[in-house]
Image (cartoon, rainbow, N blue to C red):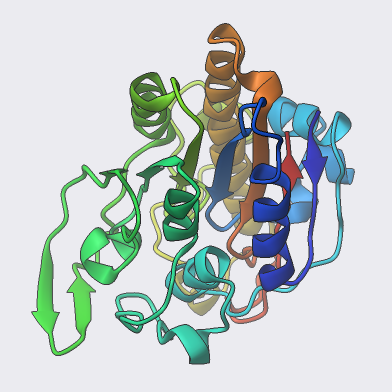
Length: 304
């Protein structure tokens, strides 16, 4: 059974514990897998009626067998603060992470810590320097994979990364998640899996890079940009914008493929039916030529 919820984060947090931790003593509590895809627009998924209905078959499968909600607001359209809110149930002004690289307050409690108190083994896989353990995001985890190259400079309470985003690809993220599952699945577990691929720059691996792009496009906008602001400042044509959208969609399709691998692994191990799956995003993306501040938030919560 898969359910999908979209509501205030504190209700979300409470609901997880009520469902996951109230079984009788003769039943094993369900596993909980929380998947967050960075910068994913809700209106670029097949289950929300996107014109490219082949873009997200695995995410759509979660939606088709669960509960799908359509209205949600991110507390801040930035990766660090939004994830901190997702994982604590607090607003940015309360948890203290008000921008990427800012350290949350030390006295707050994180979702993984609650699960640990209920006897769960906890694991996390993150795909960006923004969610580094040294920024507080690893609190409460027994396993926390943040293995990717990161060059940073510590200044006061902020970690500043190089201008080149330090991330890992969805294939590696899923490989790590599978490895952690194999290590902890003999008892109830909570696993947080963070994918970064739909975040700019847009450079999906083949064959996903070529899935949607126009082969006759020969313009300058090939996805090698850190944000849509770069594109807007250069006054792109409609074909330039469409090429960026096509590459963005390729990143979504690539991520969906590897989410499918993760779901298949749960099924092969025989634990899928006793696993609650929550699927969401931290915020959306501006893909219409508007500044990135003008974002349509996209967050989805499937339970399984």
